[in-house]
Each structure stands twice: as structure tokens, then as C-alpha cells.
Image (cartoon, rainbow, N blue to C red; front, side):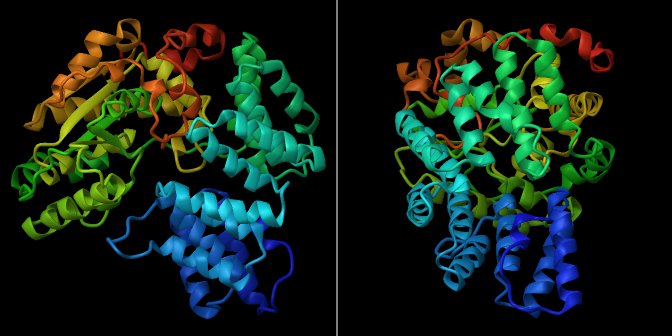
Length: 486
């Protein structure tokens, strides 16, 4: 049973409750797009159903739908209404905090989660969210103090996960294992939390050099969800065929403020953004889903001058909202999968700078397998599927280079980490910005971090992740076979 569906509830018709459970099951299975219309229909029937308000708000939060300037995003509006209906529920406040954090609304996120902690100082999810907010501002000691205090009076999977994560970040790996191990076999813990535990154990054992044990835990985590296929690159190429690209108009806009950092996940996009955003005149917004949302609004053959101009206005407006400081003349969007949408980007944002992050394919694919992406990165659960996705990505990038009139700068992770300065200078040259020594020490930035890779960006540039695949070579033969020609 989904935790949202437990506890007291008003009396709803049985048919309604069954439909609500089906929607919850779809969300648990990662079928967000199928669940959202069902939840909208349920909300029409029962506009004050707190559980549906929360489920729909959280589903939309994962899509991070951009709202027009001066309007409240739909997901936050729904979650705020749920909070009004049940103001003493810390879970709803946690929903609000998570949604605000996704939008970069750090102050609002702190306010919501602080209210949740006032209601329940040991609330596991609230402690987890608060620690993530503190980590993003490099307030690690405060995060440690918070979780240690909470664990004195309560115990929960969430508290153990956040405690073990802090142990990982502090390089106290054995302590992190000791925190998680007593709970790992408790099957009554909900699946998402057990997955997080197995991923964390994999990371902790990996740091200790116990690679067989690490791989066992990563495999357990990945097999808890069903295997999904890679993206259909043939269908995408057919949609964005040569004729469509030649006919597509270019927006009457200046896209030169935009820097797109693209590539496969785990290819160095976070490091690249942090290097650039350490520059006093460059901002960063993390991974914005807006390009992907725009790409799915209309078939490419239907994008005319009016549509492409509207897309440009919306995207550039989002940059202005996220980074209102006009002294930041460049803004980095590091959504890796935007490589799929370079055809749209080049027409929507003329003058946009594109940086393509590259890394050893074997390290990229293995690192994806080791990362708890959640259900929205559908191909990440199986090594061979990840390799197939990688081959499709290579094919897409080759196609864009052949057909698009744009300069794409390749930033190779191994070169960047081995000898940072010349490659950082090349990055800045590509985006037409002067060199600044702050870019050599991105871990010292005072800016908040909009990424899941917080531990990485709070450390100096390092090269210990190179050739990591060799530690697991005996476990990944089929993946290596697929990648042998890359």
C-alpha cells in the first residue's frame, strides 16, 4: 500500500477508492504520464481529497512544469491547498518543501520543512529534506547535528538513509554500513526506501574497495523495478528528419545568455556546470525539464514562427526568473538529455552555446547503473539496456553534427580532470567569457547547488572516477561487448 493511502480518510465511494489505488499503483511503477490524467479526473469528482491533491501535486513536481511569470506552478498550488485542508500534516509540508526545492525556491523550501519539523522533530522525511537543503548550502555540520539529534528520539528508514548519506560524504564508510545493515532485510519497509538503502550500501562498499559486495547491492537495487527499453531513437530521427529541420523557422530572439551542457548522465555535466557557474558572471539552474516539455507540445513539423517565438520567450523568461541577476550574462542548463533536442534548441535559441560532455563509455554506463535515478530514467536498471541507450546517444550526436549549423564544444571528462586549467579556459572561450581563477576551484563557490551530485561538487576536481569500470570487469561482460566499438 502506498503510504499516501494510509491513515484516516473521508468516506468515498468504493469505485472511487479503487480508481485512486490504481493511480497510486501507476505512480509507484513510474507510470507518471498514465497516472496524471486519472488523478485529474479523480480531483474533478472529489476536489478536496487530500491524498489525490498530494499525489497529483507530487507527480507534477517530478515534471517540474514551468509556470508563467507571476503565477504559481500548478503542483505547488495543489500541495498548498492540501496543506490548508490539513495544516498539521508534516507529510504535506514535506511535499511542499520538495516541490519548492525543485524550483530553486530555497527560502520557501526551508520554511515548509521547518514547519514539518516543528510538528515532528524526528520526522524522517522532513529531516532528509532539511539535510539536503543544508548540504546544498555547504552546511554539513548542521545537517549532521540535525540527523544525530533526530535519531536520539526516533528511528526510521529515512533517518538511517540520511545518516548513512552523511557518513558517505564524510568518508566514514564503515559507519554508514553499520547504520543501514540492521534494517536492510526488513521487507515491510516500502520499496523506494529499500532501493535507496541498497544503492547506498553499494556506494559505501565501493568506496571501501569491496567491489563484489558493492555490485551485489547495486544489482539488488536495480532489480527491484522492472527492466525498461531504451529510447526509440529511430522514431525521434523520423520526427526530426532533414526536411523538417530545413523548414523550421528560427526564433526572433537572442539566445546568447543560454549555455546548454548536454551528454549522457554521469558524463561530467555536473562538474562542467559547477566550473562555469563559479565564474562571477555565469549562473546555473541545474537540470531544467523545460526544453523537454516544449519539445513534446507540438510535432516538429507543426512548429511555425509563432510557436518557435513563444517557446523562446518562455525559455528565456524561465532563465530570467531562475537567475534574475543581470550581471550573470550566461546561464547554464545542465539537463544531460537535452542532447536529444538539439534540433529544437538551435532554432529556439539562436546564439546559444552548446557544450557536449564526453567520458569513457564504460565508466558512464556503469555509473548510471550505480545511481538511484528513480523511475523516470527508465533505461537505468539494466546494464545492456544502458549500453543500448549509449549507442543511440552516440548516433544522435553524430546526426546533429552532420545537419545542424552550430558549433558544439566537446569537453572530455578524462582530459578535464587530468589537466583542468587549459580545458577550463577552452570552455570559457567557447561561451565567450574571460578566464576567472574561481573556475579552477568550483568546490569553493558560495552558490547553492541544484544537483543530486552534491558530494561531488563540494570536493576539489578529482580524477579517481577514471577507469572505474575495471573494478567490475568480471561482472559486466555483456555491456562491454556492446560498447567495444565505441
